[in-house]
Length: 484
Image 1 (cartoon, rainbow, N blue to C red):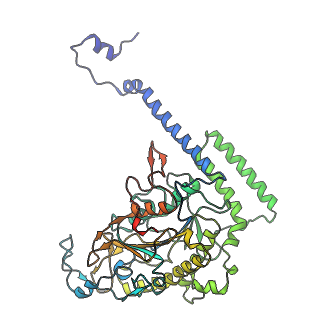
Image 2 (cartoon, rainbow, N blue to C red):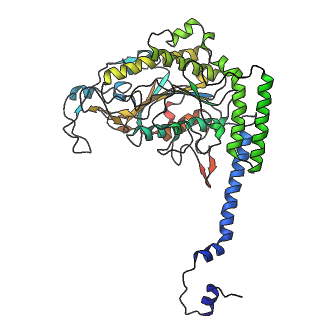
Image 3 (cartoon, rainbow, N blue to C red):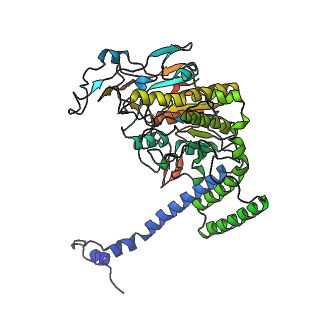
């Protein structure tokens, strides 16, 4: 029988222990590795069982009584200038054209100047909310919206900013807000996806990870539908005889189930089965739901579908489709802007006046029409409308007609289910440089959205990599001053 090194060391107390080899280390710790592997397998099994429960016909229960049932997220990609939209700064007019000398980068001082807003601000509604002339239609709903002027982001970079807005993280790999919502609440329609993104086919700066399910089951990933025309490729079945298509689907299901069993159960395969079945059900429903010819001429005009400006008409189409989707039971709908600057529609480092005016022309009437339409149909009190970009824009400029990225303080607004309209939360300083009063970040925004949907952001968790993850990580406070 061979003698081990540890036995020799025990026989010779005065002998200094020699380093063990890799082979000996692995042999002595094998049980520990086995327990770690077992722990990982058990957590994956528990997660799969939990997802199976939430995918049944019975919807998951919210943590408490919700104020809203659905979300329509109007994503203003590129960063709308807060000092030109919902956060007036009269002092900028006093300093207009004077040198900006407050940069943390000494080389920038003297090369930039303060830039006043090219647009006037006027008070609107009974609340007297100041809104820029950029948004005359949204301004008519001043008493329905709650403006948060004290938002902050982490970095002045589009890709990380877009990810942070959507996932609560600057890094890819986390689930999108819409995925968390459907994971927590499910979808009211068995024939439509719970999370839909209306897209112009342009990938945002954050990449498709922006709309990803991350580590959540794949069934919670966004379904991308075209902003105009046929909503999704091949939505019409190739086989005219439905029996043939059903037979093909049954064969595909049996093959996928057999493959999943051979793997001992696999989320990717199970989700693929669910997605194939959802696609089949969508074939009969999606064309009808998104057929805007069913809408009256007055409703189409309300959204600007009669416009001669193609981009305005397309954005109006998205907003009207969003209303029809939530009306049909879709839980979370995101509306994207028509393609514009390379890093986002609102990214005007130059041509600020022309760029922001075009973007406002495209979006203003349709968003206001959406609020009007939701109110008329009794859907406004149960639908949360969110208007937000990844950051704002600098109150200063390197020229006379442009603004740069500005995460230190900017504006978003919300309206609808559970929101106290006509309110303003927080403030930036006199020049719009920094959020200084009741400062909020993306985690606070996410916590508030989940709260309005009846979800406690601290309790909505998912077990992954041996820890419980949540949308707000270890952060987030509900912005209670804007709640009804």
